[in-house]
Length: 196
Image 1 (cartoon, rainbow, N blue to C red):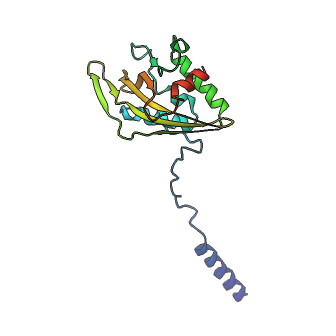
Image 2 (tube, rainbow, N blue to C red):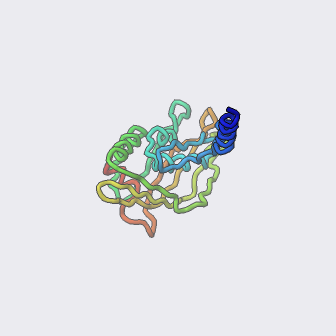
């Protein structure tokens, strides 16, 4: 009887020491922008807006994308988009925030995957006016790869103006898109015009 009890105690001790502690904490898993995680930083700094814009595209998150733009109920301004000059201007007549949401919803619904990068990593922000807390970015290059039935690449340059609202959050109120000397014919404006 004693031998059987010793064996059971011995097996119990081995079992306890061979298992991991069920009460220990696990390692924190870093969010991956490619796996549907939701990466969005409250834009208390103007720099966060472009980062949020990038992740919204990669994660195909329409809500986070739209949060990058001004809320006209919090800022007394209208949103303005200036397309690349190669696109007929009448295609963008009256372009507003609803058009931003509509085109992107169509892009997200028709694409399998989106890759997006700012080619220029050192985007500068210059104060426009302190009375309204607004800044403008230096022109920056971007590249977006969208997997439709085939891979489509959109690249060019953009300049944006941002303003801080009454909640001290930054948002885009002006967006100018144009080609640069090394971009292809398909700018972001071209994507917007197709999916308007």
